[in-house]
Every structure is written in C-alpha cells, then in structure tokens.
Image 1: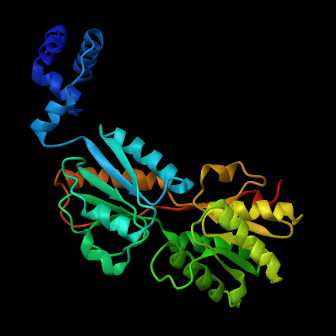
Image 2: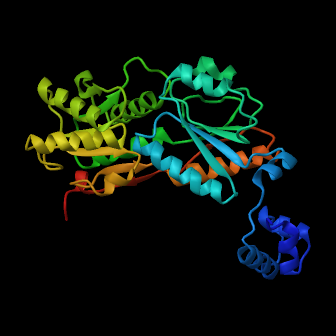
Image 3: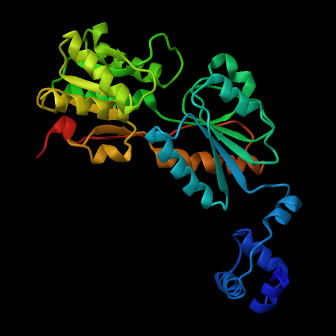
Length: 336
C-alpha cells in the first residue's frame, strides 16, 4: 500500500498537519522537528500527491517564463537563474519561446493559463508601447527587460543606459575616439537596441565627439554570425575605427573572430567590448570586456516579486532596475 502522510506523522511522532507544513515549506517549524519529519519521509519513501494538493489549494506550483529564444546565451543563462530562484520557493518553471515575434507574444498573453501556471515572468521583444493594454491579465505577471515602460505590470529591468555609458566611457578613457557599434536596429524607437545605441550616442556627444553614421553597423538577431557579418561590413566599407562596442556579447564575440582572421590585433589596433557578461565572455581569446546587467539579481527579484504578487502581498506595481557592473578584460586592456 502507498505510504500516507499519517504514516509519516506516526513515524516522526508528530501530527499530520506538521508533516504537511514541512512538505509545503512552512517557515515556522523547529529545526529538530523538520529533521525528524524529513528523516521519516526518507525512511518510508513518502511522495506527496501533487495533483491532490493542487486541487485543494487552487495552485499548480508552477510559474511560466516566456523568453524570445534560448539560443541567445543571455536568455538561456537567465532561465537557469530563474529556475534556481524559483526552486527556493518550491516552484517549478515552465519555459516557452516567442521568437521575438509580436503575434506569438500576444498569443502568450491571450492564452488561458490559470490551470497551467500560478504566475508568469514575461520578456517581450516584439511588442511596442501601443500594446500595453494587452498586458492586463488575471494571471500575476512580472515583466523582464525594457520593451515596455510604465505599464500596469510589475517590471524588473536592466539599467541599459548606465551600463552602456560605462562601457563607452571605458573605451574613451583608453583613448579610443572612433567607436563602431554593432547590432543597431534602424528605425527602432523602443527596445534594447534603441536604448543602448541612444546611450552610446549620448555619451560620445557629451564628450564633444562626432558620430559618423558609417560606424553604426545594423544587425537583426544578435547572434555570433550577425556580429561577424557586421564587422565584415565595417572592414569592407573602409571606415576607420579603433574600437567596437557590440550591443550584446554574441555580437562582440563574432567581431573578435573576424578581427583575428584578418590579423587585426585586439586591443592594440581595435579594442572590443560587449554587453551581458555571458559565460563565454570570460573564456574567449582574448577575454571580453563586458557589462554584467545583474542577471542573477534580475531573476531573484523577479521571482520574489511574482511570488508576492501571487500571494496578494503587493498593492502598487513596482519597477526595479538591477545593478550593473563593468568587467574589464583583455579585449580592451590587453594581456598583463
């Protein structure tokens, strides 16, 4: 016969309610009692009936995470951090990809999900300011990223402006004056590319520097190959540059590959910097100077906020900007 909660209680010498509290992560349990209950669970091989618990509580114990694409390292590493943060609350994460496509992002918002997840972490790239009305949902939600500002939804974001300015200021402090930028989205008004490129322009303008349009190399999806192609176009154009800023790390890493193939020394001839501090940035040759947007903080604070929203403990909607950090490495400083 299947082991029951009463069997565990009897083995541990406590009440079934105490066993339930331990299983559900109730914080106000004495350490000695918790240890006895967990030992009894292990000894008897007890497994909680999750379906029964969910029917009783009206909760699934699952939260959703909707991201543009996991093939971009930033989102893959963010998902990993979200899973870690959710596990601390005893929650499971269900991940779906939108492809940064507006229609698919709207489908995510319109899909009935109350029976699937208790809340949603949502990182849109295809939606614009005119789509704010679609964010109204009966499912608790926290936005990630910067695609929509001042919406009626909690929002944990990257400090793109200050982070980008820090990278550009670093390059300027090294004496670089013709800084090319990879991954620009011409015509974009809201979104990561527009915000980071705008911060790049503002920083150079503050230093009294001209910004030749030839130094802005467009790129659609911010993948390694796009960074390589953008760098090839820069070199083919004949425009002079002494530094490259990739609007994300993949673009910058693609640039490093092309520069190496062409015999262009980094950072002697061209310094390179990126944004996101993905794992590969520490291990490229040379290692990549980059902005860490605070991915772990974003995940933790977003999950914590979503849990509070799910519990009804939050009244006003919150906007939180994570702290960034510039990691200076060999691609701008050279090998010491």
